[in-house]
Length: 274
Image (cartoon, rainbow, N blue to C red; front, side, top):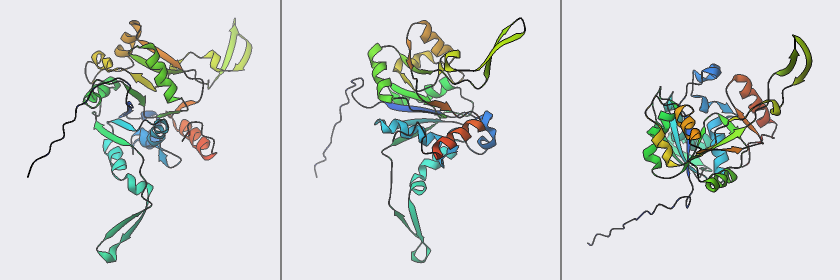
């Protein structure tokens, strides 16, 4: 018998295939401790589905289906969820009279490839990214946090990143204010108004696109991405802002979760683009 071998040659051509999407899902979520003591924050549900699922669906709507999830706190919960994904999404018959036969009805699967990486319990954001370098290789990739949803146009974000040739692009938004603004002169309040976006500076909303050079700026597990790496890249003129004027909201508190739930239940959730 003649053994047949198929040799596969891989040629790296930037942007010729869909980028991988890296999701940071390893934090403790202490500010929403009502639920995070039982599960990692990205697994807290909005509309009966983990917020992590909502984020992945947003990327998938633009054809980005290759995910690398940086796990940490209660990593087994995330791993178990994807291991049992068919059970979560399908009707099932258990036939105990017929040798414990299992039948899955209307089998549904997302077009996803999901790599789950235990990046350590106390690892910082930069360290988590460094740990998944071997799954990224020498290709650009996308990165976001596992607790924020948005209607950002992923394709336009990628096109903007490709247009400037810098190391990193960060989506920037102006958040709505939660508190009123006071105009004070000599202890006298001359005007009171609700805080608007114009009163706020831009903040990091995640939804980044990064070149593989980013790994060179990360030392070890103790490195916080938002500190030295991004600060250094910014000082070198290598960090660009993609200004998003649409919807964005993170789920830091129980109040945030309730607002997202209300939007989802209303059928008008802005991030639901699929």
